[in-house]
Structures are given as C-alpha cells and as structure tokens.
Length: 428
Image (cartoon, rainbow, N blue to C red; front, side):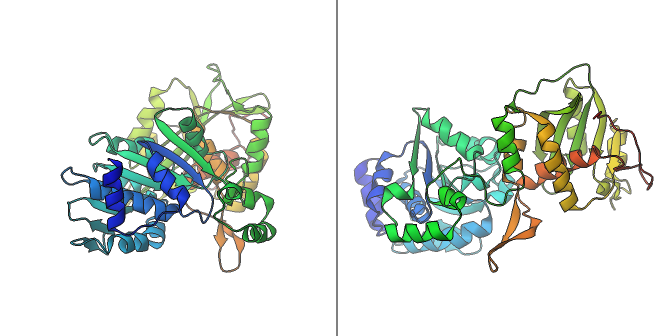
C-alpha cells in the first residue's frame, strides 16, 4: 500500500495515532512482533491498522482477522473500537452476532478467539492481528494461522506483553534476527505515554515481578502465581533443560491427559538411575485414539506403561466401551491411576521437577505450558483462586501431574478394580 492510500484510509475513519503509533504504521513489514507495555494503546493501534489495510485492499473478498486468547476477550477489548472507528465509513455493514464489519469494498474484518482456533481451519486471511500471543497455545501460529496467509500472501502482527520466557519470547527473539520480520519492544520507562507519577504509583502497588512484566516488558520476570515457573527456571540455570538423550536399552513410560473436545497431551519419560529424563512430548486436538496409538508406534521407543487418569474407565454411551478398552485393543499397555486431588498432584510435580532433565527441543510446547500453568485470579478479591486456570496449558500440566502421581507407589488401579498395583518402571 502506498503512503497516500494508507493516509487516505486512516483519514476516512478519523483515527489520530500517537507519534509512536504513527511511526509503527509506517515501519511495519509483512511479519511483525511488538512487545508493548500496558496502556500503550496497542488495541487501538491494531484495529486501525486492520481498518486501513482493509479499506485500501483492491482484492475481491479480502479477509482480515483480530485474534485474542478468548473470544470473550476479543469482544470485550476490541469490538467497541472496531465499530467506533468504522462507524464514519459510509456503507458499512455490522454483524453483532458474528462480530464482523464489512467495508464498502467487500473487505471484512472479524474477531476470533484462540480458545477455539481450530474453527479457523479452511479460512484465509489477507492480514491478521494476534493480540496477547503469550496467552495462546504455541500451535495457533505455525499450525493454524500461518497456513491461512499463504494464498493471499497475507501479513501478521503479534502484539502483547510478556509472560515469562515462553513461545512469545522465542518468537520475538527469532524476529529480531530475521530481516524479513520487524521486532520492537516498548517499555513504559521509554515511551513516555504514562506519566512518571502514575508509573511510580503502579510500581508501589505491584510486586517487582509484576511491574517488570506488565510495564517494563521483561521476559525475564516470571509469571505471577505460576506453579512451576521457579522450579523450571532453576532447572534451566542448572542445565537440566537442553539435551535429554533417549537411552534405547531402557523402556519409556508415557503419561496422558485425554481430551475429547480439546487437546490430548502425552509426555515421554525414562528413568536413568535417580534422574527422570523427559525425552519427548506430543499434543494434538480432535484426533481419535487410533491417531495417538499410531503416533506412538511410529516412534522408536520401547514402552513400559502408559499412565492414564481414572476417567479413562468411563463408558461411552454410543459404543458401550471405555476409552481404556479402545486403547488396549490398539495394543497399548495401559495403567489407570487412582483418583488424586489436584493440590496433591501439584505438590508431586514440584517434588518431581528437581529430578528431571528435559529435552528442550522435543518438549518445547510442554515446557512452555508448565511455565505458564497458574491459578485463576479472583478479580473481585484481588487474590489467586485455589483452582488452576483452565486454558491451553492445562492439558500438558495435567499429563505431567499424572506422570508424577504414577511415580508414587501405590498410585494405580487395575482396570475395574480398587486394588493398587505395586509395579513401577521407575527405580529411585
């Protein structure tokens, strides 16, 4: 788009960008990662970038997307701005139920939630914004959104604040080294957008960790309340997140969190003396149990047990079979874990992690999930809840909790029985 056409589109919907925002509009490339502090104005900036690009697009049926971690977030944060800044454009059409706005040239801008990202499959984008990408599953970009840009050579803009050294951090660092990407960081101490006295007041009211993350855009700050972040930070410092070589002569134990409408997560572990090597991780969504059996059979590992939670024994109304029956018919040696409280399971994981060595490459997605697994936050009382937050991190965290529980004897149930099984493939 030429600068004149961009300016014309901006003027149509009466957007007056701040100096930093105006500079960003001019400097964006096809792929962009922007790390911005709270109250930077990133949602207004992103919505207006979408409108400007959509208004100037001459292609037939151009499509643009704004993706937030949750659809409810997209509606709460961005829908008002999208309607407000497109309202002065003659001939627009708005769908309150589907959360889209159609421009007179046929271009459409629509809001989406990454909590149901699979519904995006089969669509295409001329451009997309992923807001607060740190809170989304790492697979949203490479598996779902990136292929949507190929047909139209579409662009992407990631923007948000850090949540530790997770996939958003990795993307930012990668973008900073790639000449085809634009990467930029905006700490509040440098932008001048928030008054100094307000920043000082925020610093007094927040922990140093919270302030560093939310206002200074620090990836080094841990995620407030995260159950395992400090232990994983210690593991990284001690060199236990890096290489965890597979020992072909030793059996591999897996632990599963089985999803029905969402993801299934599987960890692969080996005991080598007193240490536990976490050698692999696999996650997929919407696939039948046969998919996971084939995946395991395709790997070179020799398996000991496959640890699954007690609800694998629930019978499905359609077939009358349990998922345990199905897995055993597929040739898997399944052990069912005794029901255990979440708090006890979290404590078992905390005791296990100091013994673990993680393969950083094969387990990257699972490690990201463990770093971010955290309790719900009670906004009214301004405290963390006793319940873990259920989001994309839950599947990997639950599967790892089952691994930790499976290493504590007696912890297993025979199928259809309440008798514990003393066998464990791990030697301590």
